[in-house]
Image (cartoon, rainbow, N blue to C red):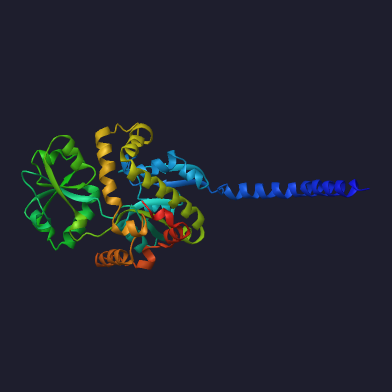
Amino acid sequence: MLGRPVLGRRALGMGLATLAMPAVLRAQAGAAQAARPPDLGPYAIRLTWIRNAQFAGEYFADSRGYYRDEGFSAVDLQSGGPGAPPTEIDLSQGKCLIGISAIDLTAAAIAQGAGLRTIGCLFQKSAFCLLSLAGRPIEGPKAMIGKRIGVQGGNQVIFATFLQLNGIDPDRVTTVPVQFDPTPLVAGEVDGWVGYIANEPNQLKRRGIAATSFLFADHNYPLLMETYVVRADSALHDRERLKAALRAELRGWKDNLRDPVGGAALALDRYGQRLGLNRDSEIMQSRTENTLITSPETEANGLFTLTPERMERNVKVLRDLGNEVSQESLFDMSLLAEIYHEDPTLIRV
């Protein structure tokens, strides 16, 4: 008789444990399901140029599984280049979730009725520059007056805008049509060269040719480039996919800031391996671009962010150039704001 209550308590304990096991398993299954990323389907981002080191952050995000970690089942890094349509067209036609572009191109598309928004900006300064030989330096915008400046077809509008913003009559500068190889500058056929700070200056440096350059951004040219652009309806109704993509992009670009040589290697050996890229040039490009990505503002607020003052300055310049846009029609920085509010550790670079 004395043993029966003990047995009863033991049996009761075993029974309760047995009853509790399904609840534990259910809790474990729920936790595992919560940890599993959502199924966001495929992700497509339209690049502005060929697959060189300019997009090293995307290569890190893809190769290290950051897009997959966020829930994307596949990744399509769509090349741009001279033969590609404008990013804004591909976005409007639904060919990509995010497109990389420049603020003046997006503003022109919006002014023509396209529903687009800029949701972030990689470069904190425009990469366009004026390149000249060290023996015949052009040290500022006014020094271009009376000179022959080589300008590529795709950069004619940018150069005309730069002249206008610096109060230079275009008739006082001789514009010479050129391609992308700066050999005419070396040969003395032109005095200056509109270039991309991470490309042509590094090409000449690699060839042992002394040159000097100045950034448009340091001379009254605030217009943004390497911007992240989306359809306006996506910014409203596809926010979780956009935030997932931006988080993966952030991780990828932080990796390139830490390891620009590794980012260049991804361009050379995997993503652009068929393009005949030069290893030294790609490493130099990756390192140079890293200098454009961070600023005191991004250190305080996080990569890709823009202050209201910078956005308003861009809107003012664009309106002066004839684009009827507003800050509200051009920018939506709420996605980044939500990302950094939800995880402030992402702000750190």
